[in-house]
Amino acid sequence: MRSFLFGLGIGIGLGILFAPMSGEETRENIAERASDLASSARESIDQGRERVQRGMSAVRNRGTGTTGTTAETRPTGTETAGV
Image (tube, rainbow, N blue to C red; front, side, top):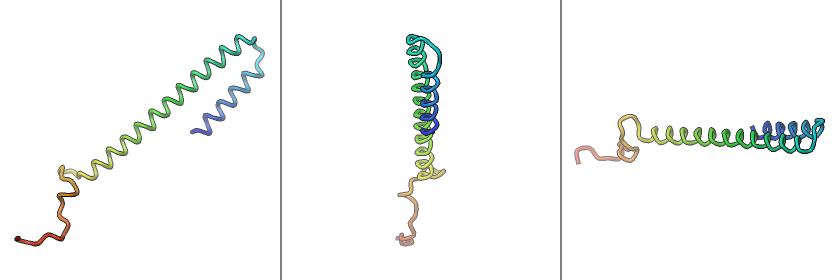
């Protein structure tokens, strides 16, 4: 994903440099596209953060099992019977 965004930025930059526009138009265009790229990067970061949080929740839920007991309260096989 990073390489895609990097390539996108390079392509946009080159396209702007070679486009027949005035300096002011070019600066406005650069600012607009940089803002779009920053927004895209923020969205990607937020999506990644959500994936990590969902993964962590899934791991925690596996540790508690479906009965709500933790791994620490499960029998380990070392208990003595009837004591």
